[in-house]
Length: 227
Image (cartoon, rainbow, N blue to C red):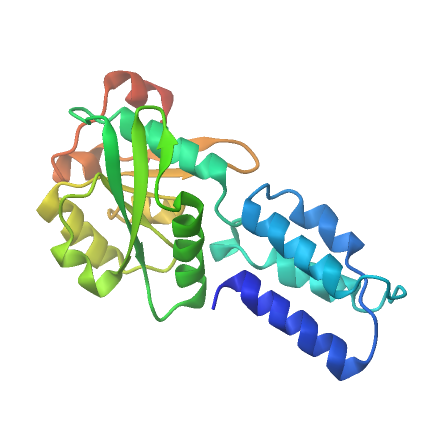
């Protein structure tokens, strides 16, 4: 079950258990920072759930905290801007072709946040999303099955994955690993880490890239922060 589904269920249960109406307007201020379709759909569902009911203030703050916690590792949920950044990073890889770019989205099946982040990325990509001259196509892969991953344009890791497993797969298959979890770059697993909120930042490890036999254009390396 995704983080958003859990939130919806919690809201229903909480409203029924305490017999109090819930005010969600304060939460909308937080949620609207995420422009993803998933967040918008969730807020529409919650508005419909409590439509026409009077205001109850006491439970507004806990609900806001619940929504704020939906991101993995303290990060906001994946967004379409994240996909744009991912595609642009890949376009700077030397010998990167155009057209279909299969993305192995790797997650830790024992960690709910990791699974939620991976599923959110896959839902955003759908059957394929165009970024520049690439079409990003997702495939969810449990970290334990990553060793057999080949033929992908990149590995995209979620939170809480085993960096040793990722590092081995990247070096075996010479696939760039890209992640929002910057610490996975620092720990030698991923090649590039990025953030899109509150501003765009990109971290790159030349040592990790060299160990995996991966090369990026000089223009890209000059623009990013070395880790």
